[in-house]
Amino acid sequence: MVSGISERLDWAATRVLVTGATGFIGHHLIHRLLGEGATLFAGGRAGGRLNSEERRTVSDGVNDETDASLSWLVFDVRDPAAVRAAVQAADPEVIFHLAAVGVTNPRVAPADAVAVNVGGTLNLLEVARERGLRRFVLVGTSYEYGARQAREGLDPFNIYGASKAAAWAFGRVYWRVYGLPVVTVRPFQVYGPGQPAHTLLPAAIRAALTGADFPTTPGEQMRDFIYVEDVVAGMLAAAESPAAIGHSLDLGTGCAHTVREVVHRVWKMTGAAGRILLGALPYRPGEVMHLVADADETFHRTGWRAQVALDTGLQRTIAWFHEKDSCSLFQ
Image 1 (tube, rainbow, N blue to C red):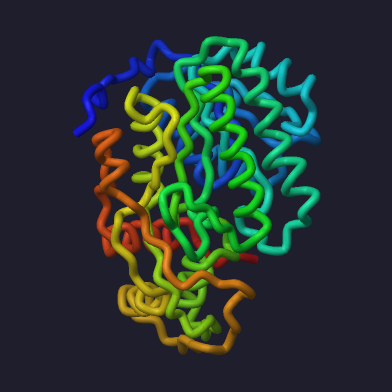
Image 2 (image 1 turned 90 degrees about the horizontal axis):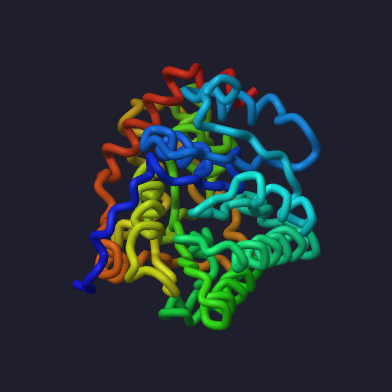
């Protein structure tokens, strides 16, 4: 094991900036950081107030109006001056950069993906290099790998993945040229409570709980399903480990399951009455059939491994949607 992975940040004495805090993973990350006692600055979307869905999400267990440890910063990552002002206000020691477009939208416009995912990252890196950060955690995606999935042998198969690969390249340059302590983490098939309704597992759970049929692809894609709380723990480990600096770490379990198998598990756990309509939908153009994390390399550099088994994570997720009256959330 690489030496130096056991360094432990005193989060209660650490100022942290999280961009993209209103997103699925960002929401869970701010919960965890508040639980650790961090002084937290959460970056929401530009354009004023949070919309009703974002407000419901971020306020689920977090009183963002009265929690003295949490401050909201509304800024546009595409605006260099706004980014600079936000970073100056937060004065962070650690930045988690999650803000992105196209995460669940395969039809995102290329210009938008470049402006936000590449330009926004570059704006943040440029300000961060002046500040002597302890860590800059850049959140990428497993879709950067595409069909090749060799170490840094990136071969993205959609616009989102391509833009995140470009952001990774800039992060690596800022580490090499300026010594900015950048770590890239690439989550795999993340799932859990609060995930957007139109994504795979929430849509399947909705159908299962309501007795509806569920049209899907043939479902032979092999994916590394990882529970969101494990992803958050991996992100914190990347922020803490000196051996992670300058590297790209997969956040996954190291085990792959077919989409159809996971949907069948949801059906079994819920006793669903509807039908799973395998093959009713086509695969996406350029679909990659096998994506699984290199969990051993991440463990080697951070000491972190995923802890939540698939069935356990699915049960927790189903219970959350049921308890939150999932049907009403989807309407």
